[in-house]
Length: 310
Ligand code: UDP
Ligand code: MG
Image 1 (cartoon, protein in one colour):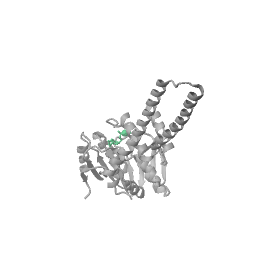
Image 2 (cartoon, helix red, strand yellow):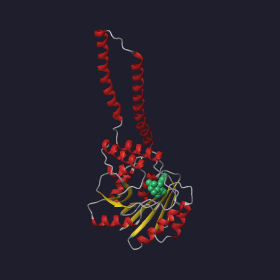
Image 3 (cartoon, helix red, strand yellow):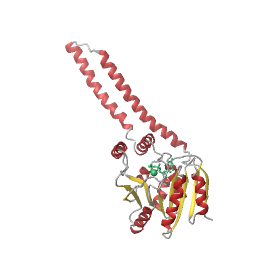
Image 4 (cartoon, helix red, strand yellow):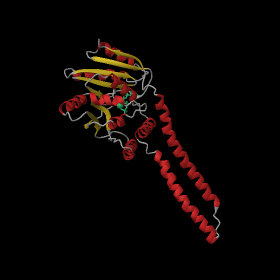
C-alpha cells in the first residue's frame, strides 16, 4: 500500500522542516509513503528549505514549485494530480493538523471498505465570536439554497481512496471550492473529530476579506439560486404595483384625492433602482465567472517539479 501526503505551503519556511521531521518520525514503519510539497509562490525561504529536505530525507519527497501564488485550492489540485498513492491525505504545513491523525484515517479506511474518505472536523472551534457567527450563517445559507450538502466545521484535513481522488481531478473548474467539490462528487465520507493545534510559526493567510470572497465563490460555484432573487422581487413588485395603480385610480375618480407625489415617487425610484442594481450585480458575478471559466486557463503553472526518487 502506498500513501501520499499532500502539503500546500505558502511562506512556511520553518514549518516545512518541522512537519517533515514529524511525519518521518511517525510513519517510519507504517507503510510506503511519499510527501508532496507544493510551494505556492512563497517569498521566504520555503523553497530553499524544501530542496534541503528533498536532499536529506530518507523518504520520497516531491516538490511542486508554483510560478506564483495560485492559492491553496490550486495547490491541493496540483498535489492530488501528482500523488501516486492508493490513499491520499491533505494536510496543512503549519502543524495545526497533527500528522498522527493521518494514521487513524488510513487505519479506518483499511478496516471499513464501505467508506471512501475520512474528513476531520473540529469539535470545538477556537475562534472569535464574530467569525463563528459568520461561518455558522454561511453554512445555514448555503445548505438552504444549494443542493450540495456542506458539513459545518469539516476541514480540508482529509484522506481519500484512489477512486475518489480520480473523481476530484475530473472536476476541472477554475474557481475551486474544495468542500463543495468533495461533497458534489458523492462517495461515502466518514467524519472524525480532532483537536486543532496552534500554528507552529508564521501567521494565517486568511483575512476576513479573503474569507468573505471565498464564501461568495462557494455560493456562486454551487448554486444558481441567487439569480432567482431578481425573478422573485420582480414578480412581487409588479404585483404590488398593479394593486397600487388600482388604489390611485379609485382615489382619484371616487374621492377626487390628488396623489401627493414627491415622497412616493422618490421612495419608489430609490427602492427599485437599488433592487435593480443589486440584481444586476448578482448576474454580473455569474457572468464574470463564466467569462473566466470559458477561457480554460490552467489551474496552476509549475516552474519546476523536483523529486528525490530515481
Ligand atoms: N496556503 C497555500 N496557499 C495560500 C494560502 C495558504 O498553500 O495562498 C497553505 C498554508 O501554507 C497552509 C494551509 O494552506 O499550509 C492553510 O493555511 P492557513 O494556515 O493560513 O489557514 P488556516 O489554518 O488559518 O485556516
Ligand atoms: Mg493553519
